[in-house]
Image (cartoon, rainbow, N blue to C red; front, top):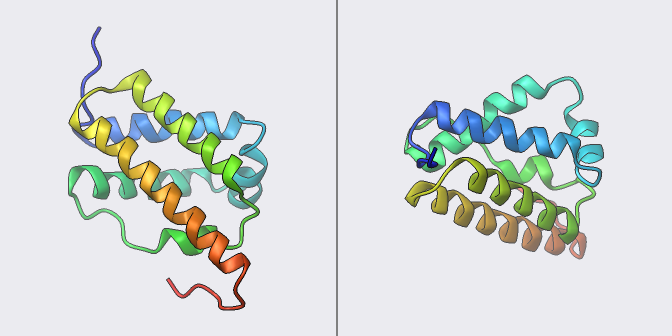
Length: 130
């Protein structure tokens, strides 16, 4: 069976559930994610459904500032590289098409932006506002 594009909420849920399943099992990422999220995975997954639905399907299902949630986490380039690799692997396993490519592109840009901001705040006494 050929993969289709990311077209609806069910596709977003498949992406998010499979991706975060891999994150939760990853020896580098799981201590950070599980340590912060703990038993609140269902709440986090619901937020991520809304986030990716907003990003990819142009449905206003998320509002917030994702960077602030990550600003104080002990994450480095290797964490972002692993995150992107797992994300792209998940996309490629289930989807193909314009939205699938957009999801990978947007995830890569978010990773770059988060890394840049984290590096900035590590070397600057200012605290992030947004």
